Length: 208
View 1 (cartoon, rainbow, N blue to C red):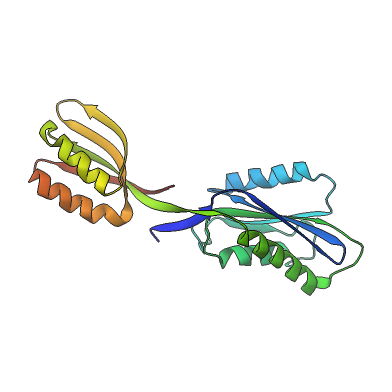
View 2: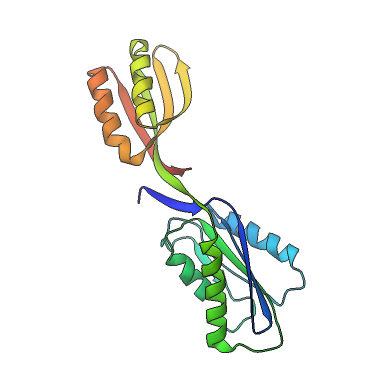
């Protein structure tokens, strides 16, 4: 997957089911640490809540490497896992969902809880703005100074992000190339340099 959607902003959604308040939050979580930090902040904001359940997918959509969830005192499997299932079936990555519940005095039963927590996350997701995150390869390019302008034009055409230039014996350019454009970059530089250029890809990473 060369690109995927991530939350562009945090969102809040609230619904009442049989007198219980369900307050849902969705936020960007590029890693588990960011997800837990957001969860901890919600706990600080709602110290009197009966339950604060959560789930996160801190990676690409549907990827189960960095995922976790919690029922926070609700019957096992009625909150965190249903919330996580909603996140895993969405087309959005790097996100955390938190649902704050204030008990209204009427028990919902296990099926009712599953539906309540699932719908809370689903409805919050519908209101969550997204943006596209592209996978990029970091690269180092060594080239003669005479080719600088031509190289800059090629990098610009391929939407490469340039991080630094070094003017030593030769020109050294550090940057990031969209992963879907790496073949075009290699071919374009080969045509320009005719053996005078040295291109090295360092690693794949994701950047907004």
